[in-house]
Length: 162
Image (tube, rainbow, N blue to C red):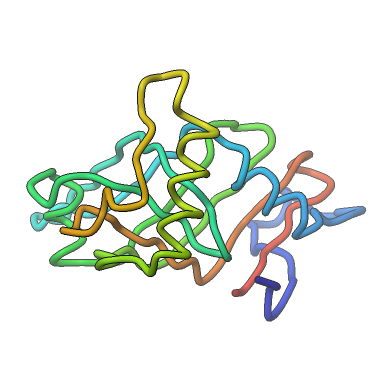
């Protein structure tokens, strides 16, 4: 996946007045691929935010994660699929806005990629799903529409429109 447009985020005067660089999209993809923990923010039906840590894998420009449709976040996205995905660091920042929804049964090729990705990242923590893990559901896909990233806030904040 390559961004359709690369710009600067809009900040109030005095925040980032003279940026000197930008974050490379390849850096963002690497961070999304290698991260272990992700934060997913959805909106409850009453309008209040709901944030949870998630395990998952970034494959082909999308973030895949799994869980029961009975969880709070799954119920939230059933009513409002707009979510934000954030990595753990507050210094080397990657924040993505997009849509999350049930992924359905993945193709065998995608299921293998997901299984391999999960095993590489989480097997030492006891989670090693097989490719048929999601045959009956429980897989979600987050499709980003924009991303904010920076490694030095005053120097390189970058906005990617996807």
